[in-house]
Image (cartoon, rainbow, N blue to C red; front, side, top):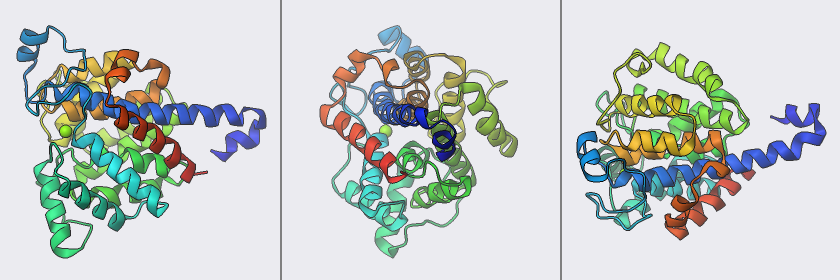
Length: 309
Ligand SMILES: [Mg+2]
């Protein structure tokens, strides 16, 4: 993006400021979506409607019995990855795997089966990459991709994809997971540069669907109860993201579909934050978000972007 500054030197600070604003909003969006969705994880839309009418308050609870504003593995793994990237000055699979291992030892509030298996593999072998598996098509690598997206902004698309796979394959080595994770990182990066929703759809999502028709979402029935399968997760996220026109509306839409709602919320929140910016984040949600988590999200967003300068 040096071209922006070269062509319009007077606009460069505004572009830089927009990127910082949207990077912070993406990070906070991830945490807000996680905290909002966790309350209704594993519930059906019918159960959610019976209990809350519309679930649109960060209230904690859920099967994990969370405090209001507490986040789960989606956010804490991203923060562990972000800290490792900052410490090593770039995306290094071994450093991230060690950070994930430390994260698991600290007894996180939740952990996915594929993530646990991948980290046990790392402990046993020292290798930060699991073998390819057609069964490991969960959403656990996609949900934590944000720090890699921020740390590689400005690199070539090939290098972004390589960095995404390095972090993903610590636990998930699967073509559907890889493609979805890379798509999300590239969407976040383009949103930070000012791309609109239609551009994100044409440039990244349609190519993903053309490559893996499983991800088709426009003509699919509304995805309810999305599971941890990356295809169902992405269909729910895409339907909510492209079917709404605001941050709050997008997150309320996706989490009220139930299922793996903390992760659909986290991924949708990351995308919607990157697109709509900090002004769109509801103040009462931010006020409820766990304060240390909020501060770390803001700090990591700034510092990860600075790696790319
Ligand atoms: Mg979770």
